[in-house]
Length: 164
Image (cartoon, rainbow, N blue to C red; front, side):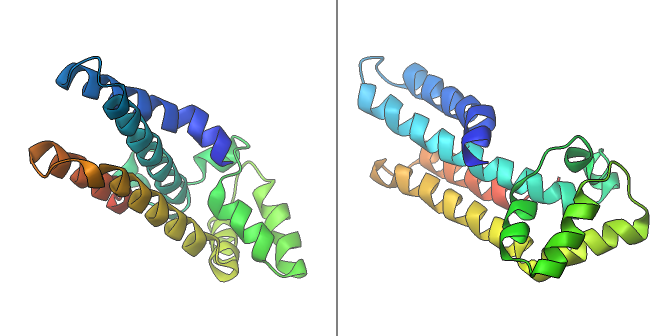
């Protein structure tokens, strides 16, 4: 899962932050560009984990897309992966049956969400996003305090605290 989202979102954000560092500093400062790439990679991973949480937990009015969209397309994301690992055998069986659907009634969706919650899938994903965010901020620790560092730190906070 993390390799997939690294190749999807981590690389995109990492490239953007590396390019930004290259434009804002001497192009010869390879270590700064590498740090900013590492920062962006971690930020991208945290952003994607939260996005995957929102696919289960958000309000369609807020996000502009229906809940369960990723799962309906066959995308198994961290909340479900974690829940399947941690669920009881009977809950795992029910999770697999519900997750394999392309459409859900409100009751089925509530059941699926309840099973993921009970197995700790949402909490696991929240904690993983928080860990990735902390790792991204740790990359910035060697940067001198200033508006750039503050803006990037705020970007990390936004990525993990957003509701859409």
